[in-house]
Image: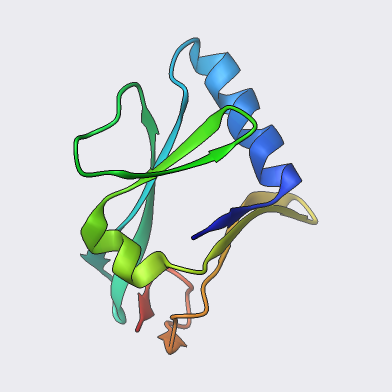
Length: 106
């Protein structure tokens, strides 16, 4: 299970409206950075056969089975700090995060 805050939902809907198509996002992990894993967000226009789908008032979040192992219990928020804004991942599975915030370790 994952959670998506109201602000994150609003931002994703806005991004999809600007894009003009799609019904949600895919959240995953990839090997990167100094700590080993990094978060990946991308638009989805269709669901893959083995995806786990989480729905938030019609907005879909797809996660592949491998990534779900690392992301289960995570909350995605959209945060504005000064002139910076972006998605924030609050993941209870993280054991450590690199200093620049690009990658994490479980």
